[in-house]
Image (cartoon, each protein chain N blue to C red):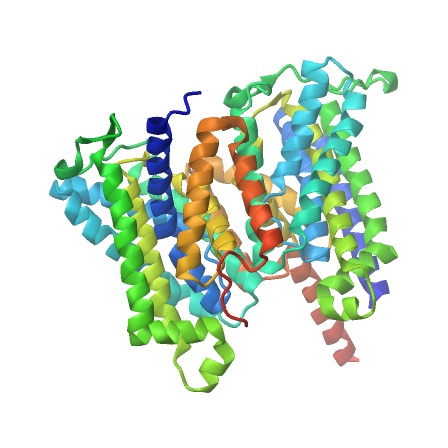
Length: 291
Length: 322
């Protein structure tokens, strides 16, 4: 196994790319969980929807960028629909019921996608601007993957800015920190939850479109990524954007290097990382608030 | 009312046993295959009910121990050439050990965290067997032998006889778990589920109870897995996917969690429903998912709960009439 700097450098970039995808996928999950103690297990389904909708949009319009812009909006709309139709009805129910319903939705979503798009695996071409390769450390590296890394960074910056500088961000911070007091003070945590939830769904869809040219698009693509995203939420600390970023970085690197160095035990590596973090810091890397 | 509830369950168990006997005697080859599947799923679902319905630990990765039991049997018979009769206890022990290792860590986490971790464990176990060359990877392993029933004059390779064997094992598992849930151990689990902090304040070693039930559930799931491996005489990583864990959870909820007999009946319902649906449409998962969501929203106590509710209404109406 060549451990020369070029190889390590390439794997570091791959890890960053995976971390970027995982961040997009898990930041919505994390903040929603921190805000309302609710985990949407159908989040992976939204990711899958984003990829398939993006695929169709790119085919119809011939433009990757249109797909990139519109698919997340479509997925956010689906999330809004789900929230209005089902989630509100579940507000009074136990967290367990909420989780079980979203689990049932995975089955529904999976077959819906199979019904509309068929069972095959699809590929999606990257945009022309980023279709080539770049020279890094003497190796060629797909330019599109650098775009993925860049997108993740941009979203991170935008989200942090939004959290720190906007009114919605202040409400979210208050709600995650101490929901009861915030509500008692008249802060509309419910509305903030709705907006944050839709935003999170949109980001999951974005992750799907972004991932489509790199990973293959097929029904069921959401599940393996969902697991990693859940681990990122747990490891990073629920409710924290920075935590999601750190967790995504850690898990992205662990998964990439694990798959390359010890493929049979890559999953054990992830589990070990998760166990270690939870044993040392039970609240996650960046623990937030108290409920 | 403990007495009333126990009587209900005994009646339900009797009815189910009778139905199973009638079905078995009248079934054809395909019917016997279905009955074996139902029996195996019933065992798996009952083990999950112990976790979900009694201890309140919702596991979405229970298929991991089911699969470990199945692969242990495959290892013992196909790779090592051992007898299936020994393979079964071996599988149970291996699955129990794995459950102990996982549970010791996982049960420290509460609520949604626990669900996520179990989901992760399930996927990781799947990924391991998928990649493992020793266990055949995603091609799977064939050549698994069934138990030798020759000493009672039966041939386990006959679908009818294997189905009978599976049903008998399912019945025995139900009786054993029924005792466990009625014993102080089982009642303590329910109490912990009900109000954990109160139990902790009373000095109860909650952690040990949780690890114990997780291990027991894993062991029984391993037994189900061993039977599944023998039934198909073939094993593949597909047995460990989240859909397997999910289907078991659906069975538990639909049948009525916390009753043991509910999930056993639920296994029959779900298998027959899936069989019917997959004959009608390719998208049976859609309807199964929709059915499940409807049950969770409208009938949280599942079929068993609904029947008991009916019984209570009729009882109340009867009393009012007097």
